[in-house]
Amino acid sequence: MPDAQSVHLRLDSQFDANHCQWLGEITGSEGHWYSYLFFSNDVMVRGALNDAKNQAFELGANTVFLIHPQDFVTSFTL
Image (cartoon, rainbow, N blue to C red; front, side, top):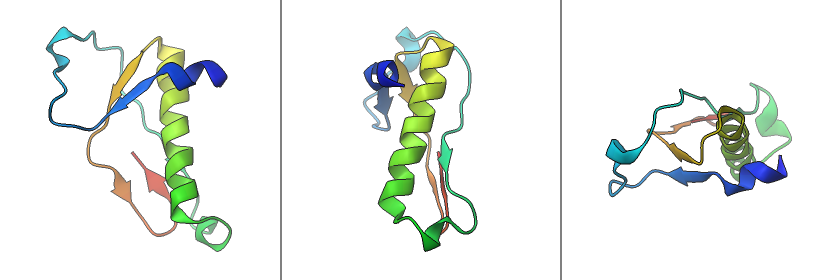
């Protein structure tokens, strides 16, 4: 979604959620058990980030605070 590019992703400790409104939890992911055969990990990371932005945009969010990405060899989830 082109409009989802306006969604900000935050992972830094300086982020203060006290001024935010909770809209929901999302899970961005990309890849399957066989994806490592066709795609590099950085491509799957970008796909997971785009998936998270798309879901956040659908919720009406403008910022996503990420918690410890789960990095696997064959897929990527955050």
